[in-house]
Length: 288
Image (cartoon, rainbow, N blue to C red; front, side, top):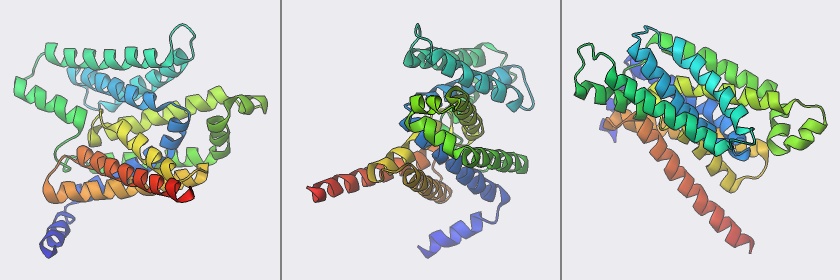
């Protein structure tokens, strides 16, 4: 144990490791805040769909040799969030079909573009490594720059501020959208706001945990909290605590054992979900 602690202290002396921990905790915080709303509104599919869109946008940025790929990934993902919401409300194209159409199409076209474009000195092995890293996250945590951290801090502050400033409106839209409309709340506007904020979170989380694992960070903490708690505020608080705990444990294990960061964090989320499921089962039997 002492050897592990010494090894951890040694790694923490490197700025890149500290950057990864800061970014990981911020992404987990933002994901858990909006995750509860998405799960309760049955919008969980949006996170998965947008993660595929972000991959396709990243492939376009790679093919075009864009230095700052955020200039393409961010607007494409945000626009797709709007389209998913609008298309999902269309009576001719149901929500699940819209997600399948946009997300799978973006994923396939992105991979196709990366294969057809000039390789610029990359071998097929390099291409496979790039795709695997993008889909499942980097196997190394030493990839974040100070600029990445500053950007993530700013965007996380905006996300948290938006959530707390519009908390009552989000609460109303989440539980009873029809009643919210009757009271004068513009539910369509707040649904759009939620979708755009989730798009922003997904874009910043993609390089950290991978585009296929982002939705797990959004869904699992919320589902775990909902197994034990019932009130909206309690579920959110518990979801945030679970998300931060799992992110911390996943990051520490990744540092000490050299495992992929995204997969390790998701594995911790899954373990906590099963623990909370058992607690819920025991509590229900105790009530009987």
